Image 1 (cartoon, rainbow, N blue to C red):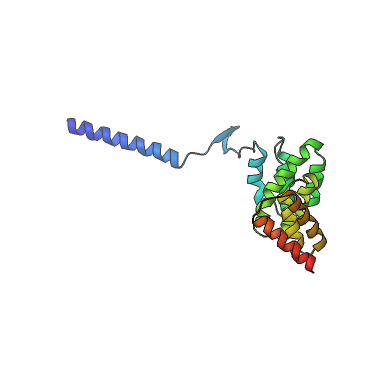
Image 2: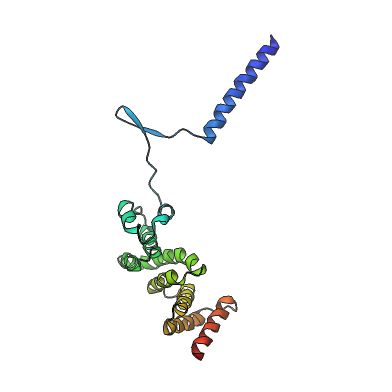
Length: 197
């Protein structure tokens, strides 16, 4: 009798463990009652500009950005306009991004430009000069002391054949940045090529 009791208890515990494990691996969808029918709940809206941008980033391209931003704008938080401007800039719509940042109070424009820089910096580091150049130029309009934006704007201008603009940006970069590293060496190399041409 004791053996049957032990076996039965083991079976019940195994069954309960399986149910508990299954609920962790494949939780049931949350449902909300609407009238007499139950429907899956919609995704929760983003609570920060950053989380909104992460969900929206795949749509930050020239074909989808306008429709997406109209149907799913950022949350009404302090950094929302900066992330929206970054999405526009990433899509190549720097004029729309400029308007958004310009409409902010003067004290908040630098912060929004910083968000655009944060999004555009990996693009610049990856060597996409055609996309990075306008983004870095936009950042510099509202945050002219950003020496890394200045460096990338200069390099992009050089690659795109805008030699006067490249020389201006890179000379200013070297005035503001004083580390003896690869950034400085690259800027000096390009400037010497420009002076020799």
